[in-house]
Length: 119
Image (cartoon, rainbow, N blue to C red; front, side):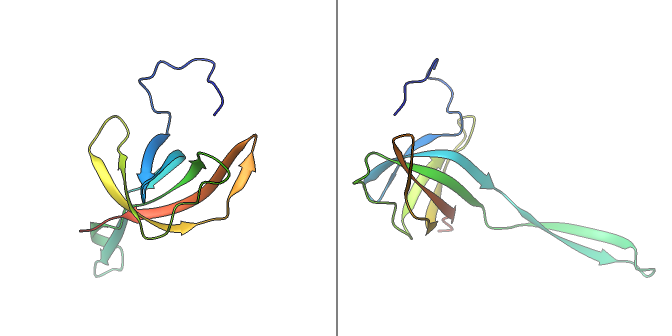
């Protein structure tokens, strides 16, 4: 892993160390979407009169950095934990799609998607 020009050790910069199925990975470019679905009820004239918002499944994506080119990619359907930005509570996610591994500047990477574990 390249040495940063400066790091104070207190900020995560959208990357975290996680363990998936007993293998350690560094997740970079973490994107988590806490979506909402909007339901609009029209009035008599057809104009919106009422609405409500319903939370949807929390989903995300990240680039997983592997320790070495011989490290296996994260398996699908595995539970792992990400700490919310700013030190919030930890959230359990389940891996979904795992893309092919690739190498950039000596780092072995693969892209993954995940969704919140519901139970």
